[in-house]
Image (cartoon, rainbow, N blue to C red; front, side, top):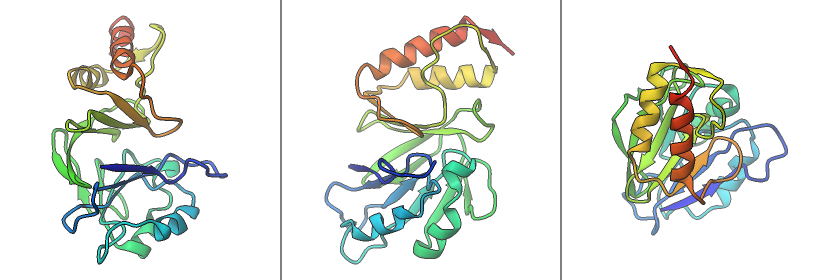
Length: 198
């Protein structure tokens, strides 16, 4: 699987936008955007990429949640590529509602949907066991203090994430976490357990 951050050098405020492609651009790979952000320059970047001969450059869009910095460019992406669009809570432009525990094909891999209500009620993470990778959107996986308050649902989602083999985390903002990702998740889970749970 290939992971390309289309907004790594964006000059506007946007989320990370990840284009996931199969390792060999095979016909049955599902070219997928995780989030679409709000930077229109990604359209030109996608056009210039080799995404497979005779294939739609974007087959699928998965939104980690509905905030504008993650979903603002959706109408443009739909006009350009007509992909299937998935989100936990449907809104204008979304074709399919996701559910916790659902599996789906992304690029040339299988991903699990993990509902992580906290940042928003519709927040999700996407996990690929084969690659030991987690796309976390704006779900906070780096909680360094015990002074916050968190829902039982968020705690249960963190426990679910902590049970997975995760070697790298691709967040909605900032650089990938490729060193000690699992240790970071355990620290966050421990701090949330010691905080106020409602």
